[in-house]
Image (cartoon, rainbow, N blue to C red; front, side):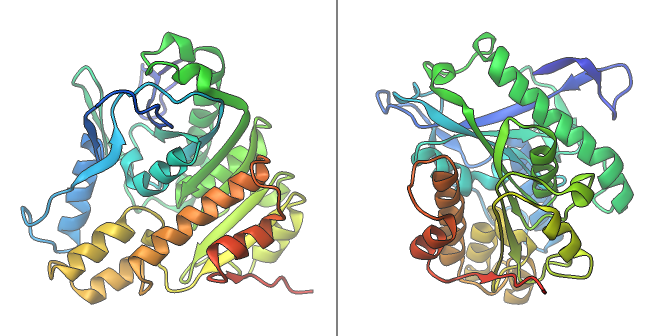
Length: 342
């Protein structure tokens, strides 16, 4: 997708370009090939990350995903969930969450935020790599990255609404998108993007922030729409000084929860990958625990999937229940609610 009305803040003289990845319910009528777990850029990011953690190069490989390429979409109208990855991450790093949502009747549209994503491989062979240091100061995140990401989100939603038929999408996918039911979720800076986009764009009806800080004008204004905050045990901002005034300003349905035993990288596919590498003896238990916590990996992934699915099911009227009761019933009392001071 190319935004004709917006310059790319990272590359002078170019319009803002985006590449998205879509998971959706398929009709199963074709023996389509299995898709890789991550696109090429995500695989590059994975190699770089594991090398930093000390995993020997060539000692591991990624298996295929549970998805299949270019199957015709299933019959029906499905809610659309936008997904924003963490800073430097690419769309394939939340495959476990996206596949589960798609298998339960959601269309997940994940965005690569160009020049910030580690690497993005375009169909024509071009490769765009990150130019944004991961240790960028908070004001860069707040004043440049966040507005760019929110504008990306709004543009993608515009394209899905007005111009999806002009893109080479799988059969029946365009008509299966129910754009009257749009939600959003994201990890880390993707969670920050979700919270700000929920504030800015009324088309987004509900959001889930997975361990991301609250940045931008939403920190001052709050939001009037449903927001689930799912934080790690080590979150440096959740429930800390300055949190309460922001949380009080949210006037919509709001659920602040912390998942014990998790760390920041628990809320993406690293929960599965690092745990397997540690079991295989390729990553120290201490390094694994610092990144994804002490929680059992299968349990963590199951809980995240359940919280996302049940939350959006209730918000979009697919499950007739109180959202707090439903989360406790389906996911069990595995999280610790944040208790706001009087």
